Image (cartoon, rainbow, N blue to C red; front, top):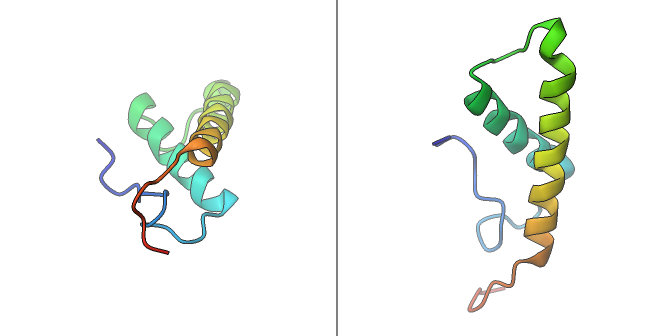
Length: 71
């Protein structure tokens, strides 16, 4: 789907920042919506979607248990 979104879970990413999560969420919403930058009348919906996806991504990463990772 979005080949340029990098994997954010260990061991692929050592330090994941809020900016990394938000950038991935923005890329996802851009791909799904078909808009690189939404028109003013769609900006609030676009931003809400980014916030929701970023939150879900953070929750997912925080709850994953990666077995057999080398640290």
